[in-house]
Length: 636
Ligand SMILES: Nc1ncnc2c1ncn2[C@@H]1O[C@H](COP(=O)(O)OP(=O)(O)OP(=O)(O)O)[C@@H](O)[C@H]1O
Image (cartoon, rainbow, N blue to C red):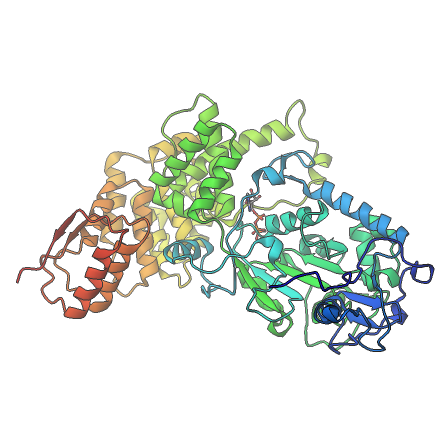
């Protein structure tokens, strides 16, 4: 049993003003770089009144152990000591830091999503939904298309221990290590920026990570704007956080800082880690990339914590030896998807309708792992449920994106054209645009290509299809789509997969009606649609990567061809298949999974089932999750 009874008062890390000789900021020159106890780089430095310096953790645990003997003494000279918590001794500094906290709080408490007005928007705490973040990297090939990565991820079971974004610097209990640099990966729209914002807000509201005295947010998108300027770390802070202008180099050296570098993928700085130009003084001017590398390597402010977020393809710019923890934002789990919609809508009926609609379409359900897609879905469905357009809710991706385009166009009109047309000068003041998500770019590319086809824009079609495009004989829609499909199937990384899905979805009359004039005069006679479907079904998938051939099914789904569904289901009931041991393992895992959807299993022609396979199957059948209703078994 642990008891406090034999202990003297714990060491004092107080905010109270210290005795007169310590009532000042501690100057950087007085502070050694190593802890007197662990001899390693000082982390969260504190000094004793006798003048020795320690990591806060080292001296605290020493005193914890020695307290029963009744002495809170300095490990070096034995002096009965008090500690000075650095950065907390200077009353002026305290005020500045408080002001900085308040300014960050104001900046982070609202979010602007899509076309919301800057400064307006929603409260972050109202809509923030916990994300599934884990340590390490799922190892998905980074060259792969991001939406495909998402589909693959949905097939993996989620068992890794989640880390809350607020705990990103806290090691797991079994990990005996300090975490100084964290690199967080995640595909576009998965919630990296939101996590960084939530982390900052919780700190600024005094709720989490209160051992940190200053959080500094430096988005790469904004760093790009000053990439040709020379800065010291101090002036850089002043540029990004004017409230910190009164902080001096000496004060900075004793504060515990945490830097958030968001969106490495957008960086136009070249971070060269082999460059040996060492910058260790916060007042020393240098180019931005050198400054950042020195900060990340720990030459500059060695006790500062660093959090870098990046899309996977850009993360390799950071040399792995600098990174103490690699994490991945994996989006929303099924439970979190539902929580997202419930938080988003105060009207419970709306959220329930949206959740059950999302569950009816496998494609939508998978895509909702991506928070930005949840937002798109919420924007579209809210619009449909609150206006008179209560017709059929969008089921395929193309349906959803077509509606989204309409909702956005409407919002844009309200925002920019209400009352007056924008002058060219006003337009010039908004020179940077970005896609909410790459999938929107691919959808617009498909709309554009469809438009070019209907308007016979020879140049664009020829540039895209090369010698395959011979229009003299006037390719009909089915022939055109066939050529595009073949081109996409030749791609190794599937970069055209989503684009062709959209292109097929746009053949449907319902989507053409929605997009009106955008697509031009189209051919959507039922015979034409049937020809497109037949072509897809007859595509030769021999020697094609499985991912590409699966995309043929996705295209059929976008065309709402239900026969595919039936065919897939027939194929999945495993009639007349020779099941190997590993196949049986897969069937068993489908029986055990939670929730399990396998209700009908026909193994009547699986004549070569071996004992090992049967063992797997019976383990699956015994699972409490098994929902099997009909089992046609092997004939003996
Ligand atoms: N935790 C969350 N709770 C609620 N909504 C979220 C959350 N995370 C993300 N979103 C929604 O998804 C959108 C995109 O998220 P965010 O900008 O954080 O993605 P990102 O990973 O930084 O993407 P990119 O790499 O494109 O910058 C947000 O604008 C918001 O609508």
